[in-house]
Amino acid sequence: MGVPAIVGQSKRDVFHFLLDRVQDRLSSWKANTLSSGEKEVLVKAVLSALPTYVMSSFRLRRMLCLELMKKIRSFWWCNSGKDRSNHWVHWDLLCRHKKFGGLGFQDFEAFNLALLTKHAWNLQLHISRWDKPDTLIWAPERNGSFSVRSAYALARSFSDPRAASSDGFHWRVVWRCATLSKIQHFLWRCCHNALPTGLSLLWRGCVDSLLCSRCGMEEESLVHLFFRCSHSVQVWRLSPFHLDFSSVSFHSFLDGWSFFIWWASTSPDQSLALGLMSFCAWFIWKARNHRVFHGLLWSLVQVAAKAVANFWEFQDARSLCSSLASSDSPSSARCWVPPAEGMVKCNFDASFSSQSSRGSGGAVFRDCRGHILHAVVFRPFLASSALMTEAYACLRAIFWASSFGYQRLCFESDAKGVVDAVQDASSCPFEIASICFDIRMDLQSFAVASLEHVRCLGNQVAHDLAMLSRDLFLVDQELFSLPPHISASDFGCHVIKSSMASPLSKHLDFLCGSSGSAGNEGTNENQ
Image (cartoon, rainbow, N blue to C red; front, side, top):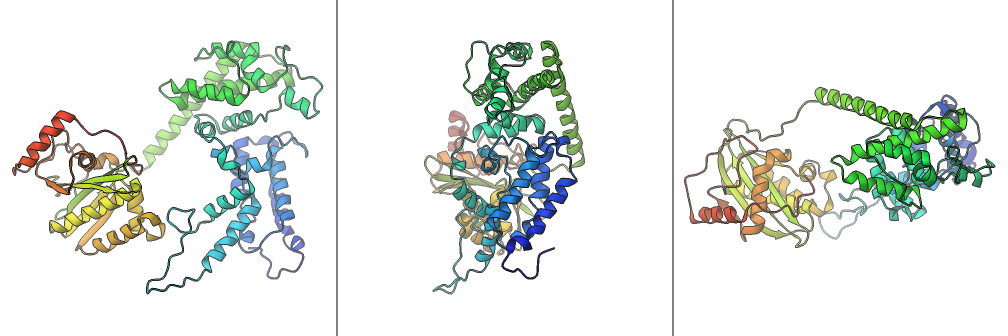
């Protein structure tokens, strides 16, 4: 792997080959021909990965990390084929997570420390006063297991403590916008005031005039360029949204982006509306650049038409790719599927209320023909999260299966977090570790038993029972008939209700018929 067998006192000379490797890759790329999205992929997948193996064994000098950062930073900002270019955003900001306004580039010092911390974690000795050894829990991870990812995030929080305090809403919308990756990076630069407008170039001593290149009336700032310039105002009026910015005042582009988000929220598809707005802004910028660098002036109708045409061309290509991908991938069952002959399937679900910190649940048992054998509701119980509620519902479903005397069962739940935690103990969140341990042990008491994940539509009856139990029951109870509003919608009409009518079932029918279905409060976050 190219790691030196002997390391002397001068680590700079020993690890200088890392700089050579990075430079060799950079020399083979033409940075000025790559879009921002393509550069991001190369930085994260290639350049940042080159020193990883060395950093997992040795602590690199700070100066070496800075030199690696300098080479990557120069590649990122280079767009004209020149060795020197303006660096519009500080490197620390580029290393922030995307949801905090950065690009998620690697901080080599923090990542080096996270990799070495993994070795220290693995060398810990656990001494216990009891027969069972103590478990060392890594608090930043839900499952209590150490991960380089969380260690890196912790190291970054010390070097950039203000990152986590950034408003992540605007940035999430930028990266989820239905547009090209290069336009997403363009919006990101706009929100950071990192475009070479006349005003920004004047501050850096690059130009002598800061007037708008199109109207020549005001200084060319981002706010003027996109919202105040007479040309831009007309383009927005000609767009399908017919926006009028003549009476709106923004202090920064981020204010304008907030207005876009609010406006798009009134449309049926927010992501699609923001995508079209982003194309309009992109072509306003392209029209400005054609005027500055080529002396060409696009008409207002031409700018608006280019933006709309390119947007729908992108959406058509996007839809085509999605349809091809969905046709190639195997389709998973969306409805309830009966078990094999001689097996019983138990579907269970839970409902959690964060206001009362209480959960409840329900389970339904069916045979290979889809006939309901038993329906059970679980009494409300205290829980700290929806995940704990789902885990406890699984435990209660197993208890009832055992009390009914079944030995060949298939348990199904739409709580993927619980299913994964039971199937893989190493990924189990520590808040439900003891419950999952009991589930594994109880499953072994059956002749044949499995726990599988199912989509929400295939678990609808259990979901309705869980919502019902939250409002009507104080103890675990078997139901001898289903309430009217609960049907086997996840398996057609293959339901045979038991003829064992009881006062309890009549009471349920009356309550459910008068009060309607339960509300949506506390919808499980694992669905």
